Length: 382
Image (cartoon, rainbow, N blue to C red; front, side, top):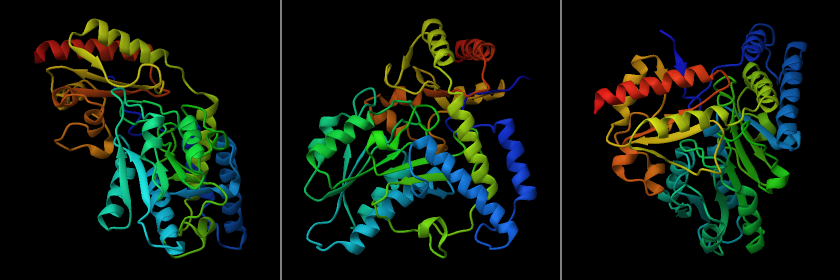
């Protein structure tokens, strides 16, 4: 049975070159980068080169890149680290610091912020989005208070692919206050759209390796010079004293190579558009979720009205086709996607939503097989 993988927003297969480099580092470059002997210094060289590669892609400085274990850790470090630093160094405790985010953020943002709120450390405003998942500038600006110190808004949504205009949102925020730190979760966007941290005007940005055909267990956080955060993992001076723990040299080196390959070979939206056209035209009672214009080139979220998405996913998997009902971090949940519900999608349609996320390995022939399989399965399910 031919196997077709269309769940690349959950994780991606490694590029062959990345696999080879990863294995080479595991075998030959195993030294601790903090050690002074030649084994350690070889690992330190790989670490430095990889940091520079990621920095160059983001138009950042090398000392602004922190390597972590994942995009989730990067988000945790950005939010919690910034708040801890503020509370530690704030001259006044008259008002709790205020954080702004949106209702469609990844749980690695929402759950962190809600935990800080539950501990009575911050006040929080969670902003609504439009029916296509867009966060409007005026909504962000109107939520700013005198005690607002941090705004975190994702660059591109992991379920719908909707892309936010972070550059213009940041400009609008700066026009109202220059004292607010801005973080963006760019885990799904990195490698798929051009990201220039100086052009965006942001202070912090999270990325991840396994979303761009690199290995799992590696992430990155850009922290602009002058933006102060506290470490949340203690025990060493690694990563500019901001993330203790022996660096994953094999993973970091492979991450940097995957980033270089991805940037050079960004795919257009041709396959996604072909998949969308066939589904919407050939299968009745289907509806696109997300923004038609501002979205990732590889992501398609479709509601199959009257069909339970989990049952459809299972039947597709039996045919060797892998898709998703939403965020991989929410798998197993019996609740409909909170992202789609925040966009005003009905519970029934949210329960029937399937996310197709394409990767470098997918072909038009595979798309034809997927659509034909969908038609056959849905015909039997009705």
